[in-house]
Amino acid sequence: MIQIGSHKLPARAVLAPMAGITDLPFRRLCLQFGAGLTVSEMLISNSDLWHTRKSHLRLAKDDDAVRAVQIAGADPEMMADAARRCADMGAQIIDINMGYPAKKVCKKAAGSALLREPVLVESILRAVTAAVEIPVSLKIRTGWSPEHRNGVNIARLAEDCGIASLAVHGRTRACRFNGNAEYDTIAEIKQAVAIPVFANGDIDSAEKALAVLNHTGADGIMIGRAAQGRPWLFREINAGLEGRHVAPPSLGERRDVMLAHLKALHRFYGEHQGLRIARKHCAWYLQDINNVDFRRQFNRLEDASAQLDAVQSFFEQHGKKLQDAAA
Image (cartoon, rainbow, N blue to C red; front, side, top):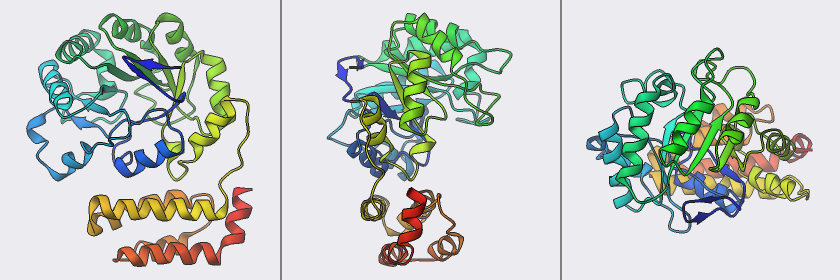
């Protein structure tokens, strides 16, 4: 059983924090399907900007799960203050993002750009771990570029600074999301530290999860983009790691999960914003079949009930195609 501070995780597969995706409705759905932990969308470290509605929604908590909040930034004092504020608001785990590959985070170098500045990394980690009494986790990439894979050194530094667990994406910052994830560096990191390590990158099935765990020796796996439109992936992975097989969701379950998710988005964001957020999730749920015409129609709908009715009708009209795609 994986333990982060005093928190024992019920499963080895956890949900990666993803900006614009891992909001409260999606986190709850993944937890229902067996995710061992979910982490909020990334908050910038400047808490003076948290007064926006967007930040308030990202700080929304689920009282039935361990509350892990991710922060990102490049100023140690500001990061420490953000961690304290999150803890005061009920966060139980602080997660530091040093894995995000975008050039612009917090209007300055942050995320995985920090991997080329280990002195600054150490300052940030020591400031945050000293600022709070709750566990602090860290997400990184394998290095700055394929020629500079310093993930092992950063991992050792993190452990020395008091980081409680580490998630490692199997690409460098320069790779962004291109090419295939590599797991040799994650295996080296696992050998170098004693804290729990989660392997992340291109894990999209129970078979791949087991192969990555066997190759890296990691304690757990972190699922990101593969869970978009497939929250039941956690159920399949958990079963596979236990030597069991579960069938993919039935057509009826797939429809019901999708409808429940859209309803939750409408409630959480309000109808206007919820309609917009629902559009991208709808596309992910139906990404395995050719549905261009339906998506074009769905994206023009301006009423919550119309979105729900459209999904219901789609499943009724294209049931066989969906079943064939799932098979």
